[in-house]
Each structure stands twice: as C-alpha cells, then as structure tokens.
Length: 443
Image (tube, rainbow, N blue to C red; front, side):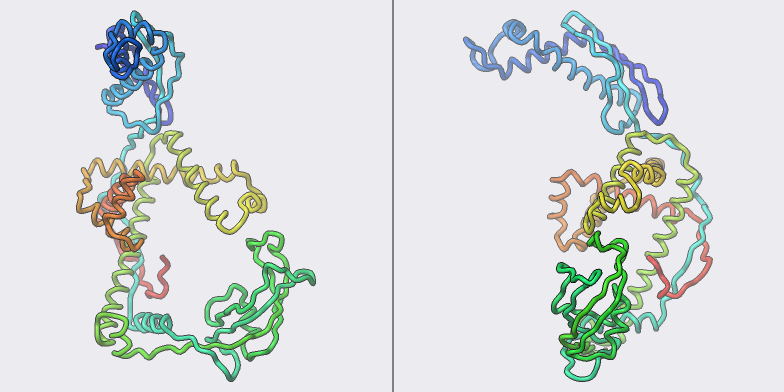
C-alpha cells in the first residue's frame, strides 16, 4: 500500500494515527500538483495552461512542497477515517514535526484526533417509569373560556367611583432614592393593571380605593437584579398621581361571541374543542416528562469517555447562552462580580451539566444507529411545517434559509431525537403514580 496507518486509542475517546506515505505516493502528489499549476499558470512564451511540466517544475518546484504536504495529509487522514470507521469530532491535529520532502523522499507523520465515542447502551426495553397524569374537567374549560373572553375585553375609561381589584390605573410617577428623584425612572401615562401579578405588590394595596386626581406614595425595595445596577437592592419611594381610571368590558360568552372568534357556531361546540385541546396538551406534557425521566435514567447508566473537544464545545455553548440572557438586561461583567463569579469559575460550574448533555447526545446517536432510525423527506417536511407555524413563514422559505445557513443537519438531528424518544417511551413500562388536576400542571 502506498499509504499505511497504525491506530492506537488514547484517553477521552482520542486516537493517535501513525501514517507513512511511500515515495510512490509522494511522487504522484508532486505530479498532480505540477499539473494543477500548469493548467492555470501564465508563463511568458507559452499560452495559458500550455507550459511543459519541466518548465513548471523549474519555476515552482521549490515552493510547492508545502501544498503537496497539505494534500497528502488530507488524503491520508480521510483514508484513515474510512479504514478504521472513525467519526472525527473537530479537526485532526498533527503532533509530530513535518519533515522536508522532495520527489525522491517518503513522508511520515503522526496525528491525533477526537472521535465520536462508542458507548454501551443500557437496556431500555421494559424500563420502569412512574408518571403523573393530569385530569381535565369542566371547571378547567370554564377557566379557559373566561381567559379567552378577558383577552378580548375592551378597555374603557372609568369616570366615577374608585379603583377596584380588576381595574387599571393610568399614573404619572417619580422614583426617589435617598430623597433625590431618579430621572430615568420617571414615568408619565404608565398603565398599571391591578389584576395582574404585580412587579411591586404594594402598588395594588395603595392604589385600590383611590380615584382620579389622588396622589399616592409607595415605599419599595428594588430587586437585587434591578436593571439599574446602582439602585439594585436599595430602598426607594414611588410618588405619583392617578391620571385616570380604566375598567375592562368583558364580552359575554355566548354563541354570537364564539362565532365571531372561531369557525364553530355554538358555545357547546367550542367547549368540546377546548376540552380536546387541553387533553391533548396534558398528554404532551405527560409524555415530555416521561421521556425526560427515561433519558435521564439511561444517561446515568451510560459510561463512556467523552472527547474533551465535545465537552469544551458544550460548555462554551452553555456559557454563551447564559451570557446572552444576562446581557439582554444587565451588564454581564457587573452581574458576574455581584455573584462572586468569574468566566472561568462559571465554565467550571457548567462542566457537570455539559458532560451529562454530551453523554445524552452520544446515547441518542447510538440508539438511533442500533434501531436503524431513518429520516424521510416527509419527516423533514413535517418538522419544517412546525417551524413555519411558529415563525409565521412558509415551509420552502424556511428550507431555503436552513440550507443557506447550513442548518438542515440540525433539523435532521432534532427529528432523529424525537423518533428516539418516541421509541424509548413505547419500550418503557410506564405506570401512573398519581393523578393531578389540570390547573396544577407545571410545564
């Protein structure tokens, strides 16, 4: 063979490849490179691409060794992956010195590369899993109908009376810290909903019973995560005036109301649809929780060495997501300092969950291969339709976007994951441990 490879396994699913390329292959690589250059070279006295190889060798010979080495390494690496049926994670790394080569020499080098680990799959057929079941009743349908009606309520000014529990108060206010007004917290025409869970609960108690034109004063302690870092955790006073009162005009739930917002014509039909939708939603939540339990149980039983590059990539992803969420509202460095953390210590904290996540990915891949799970065009279309409904776009527009940004593999991976989870759920021995009211469901 013109290229020979010896493989040895290292720790953390890493392999070492000792690769030897004989002179015949080296000479062939030089010849190919000369011909590639000749095809596009512009040399005085010759038409483009017509210069003899001898002339090309004389003009470019001293400078093409590096290109030849790159081509040989790439070709040898690809053949080694095929020979040993390895699935690399990231790029291979040359760990030996690269010798000088010529058309008369052979060539050898050593590479190391992280490869996708092969983990023994724990038994999943008949896995015992306990679950909760959620019971949907007529009272849940009543609550949903009331929510729908309220969401279509008209807000109108309230000229008389006082603010009550379900009213809205339009207020002007200032925030005072240590006796001084904080200019960027001043608000005019701010609508405060007395019915919704408040950011500052004390507002509800103070505003109820007051009327248009009255002043109010509300002492409060700002949260530790307040967006103005200088005021975080400090005591302040809100001082303001009620500009006007407003109330909700909630429509009556009758056939006319239902026909105006749906394609059914009666309240009875609408109630049936809501009931079925809620039951379907409860079933999806139950299924999601069961699948998570199954996967967690299997991951805990899965023992395999994780490539450091996979672990590092997952930690980096978790760190970036955390940074993005914090930075959306606060100064990231300041928030880290308040928490007594550094970027390095935060990454260390993520390491445990990151390893579990990577093991989960490896396990899902192994099960998919064992069960010969395939993704059809119909599966992809179904997934794209789901994205289309979420983003308000059409399937083909999303397909073009994913293909342009090399994200179709992610779509396929998510379909495979869903299919594996469905298989695991069907294979498990699931028992209902308790039944809970739908209202207690936590997603």
